[in-house]
Figure 1 (cartoon, rainbow, N blue to C red):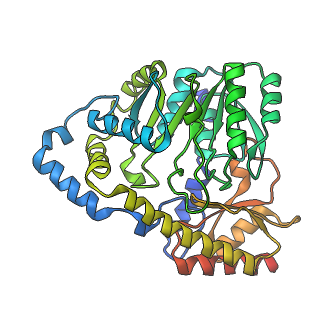
Figure 2: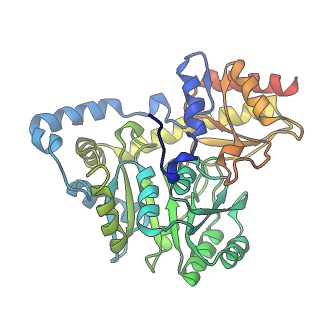
Figure 3: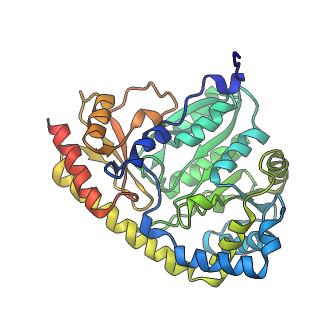
Length: 392
C-alpha cells in the first residue's frame, strides 16, 4: 500500500535531539546531548510513598477518568503556589493541568493560530516548540539574542514587517538551548510591545526554579495586567519528566478552548501523577527539595564551566545562572557536523546548534552542552575529549 501523509506532517523530520539521544542508550556514551534531570535529583522515595498511599486510600480516584481541566486539589494548590512564589494569577486567569509543558505549546497553536500566522521567537530556541509550530504551518521569525535576551527594537521591527504576527514565544529564564536569561528591562519592554500591538506572549518557564546563582527576576506573566501572557510551567525538571505533569496559566477564555482541545486529544493528564504532585506540594518539604536540586546543578555547572575554561580557553560559552545548558561557540572553520560525528565516535554525544534555529540550514559554529545528565566524572572526561578533538 502506498501511504500518503498529511501536508502538515509529510515534510517534518524527527527531532534531532531525540535521534541523537538514541546513541546515549549506550552507557559508554557521555550524554552532553541530553536535557534530563540528574539521576540523583528525583524524589523517588517520596513518590513511592505517596503513590502507595494514594492507591491504598483512594484507588478509584487514581484509576478512574478525571476532569480535563485537571485534578481540582492540585489546581487550587497551584493557584496559591504561583501567586505566593511568582506573583502570577489575576482575576481573569485560571490554571489547567497539561501533559507536560509541551502540550501547552501545542494547544496554544491549535486554539489561537491559523496556517500562515506569524510567530516571533528567540533564535536559537527550543526545537520541540519549533517543530510544534511547524506542524501547524506557521510562519516563524527568529530574532538574534544578546546575553540578556532579544532586543526590543528588533521585536518591534519584526512585528511591523509581519502584520499577521499573533504570538511571541520566549524562554526568558535559563533559555534552552543557550542558558541565557532575559533582563528585567527587556521583559518589561517586550510586554509593553505585546500590549501595544495586541499580540499574545507564550512564556515557557520549565527551569525558573533552578536558579543557583544571582537574583531571581520577575516572570513576564507576573507583569501581566491585560491577559496577554500564556504561562507554561512544568514539573518535569523539578520532579519527574516521566510523570508528564505541566500546567498553563492564562486568561480563562483561552483555557476554556484549551480544555476542548484536550478533550479531543488525551482527555485528561495522568490523574495518579497529578495526585502525587499535589502531595509533594502539600505533604513534602518541597522548598528543601528545590534547594537540593540547586546545589546539584550548581556543582555540575561549575564543573563543566571550569573544565571548558581550562581545556578549551579559546571557546566562548555562556555563563548560566541556573537551568541545565551551556551554549558554546566553536572557532571559525570548524565543520560542526563533522565535529559532532567525531566526538560521538570518541564517546560524547552533543547537539549541533543549527537544530535550534528557525532555519536549521543556517550556518553556525555553536553546540549545546548539557551538564545535568552526565556524572561528575563524565563532565570532566567529556570536556577533555571535546578539547582533544578540537585541538586536533
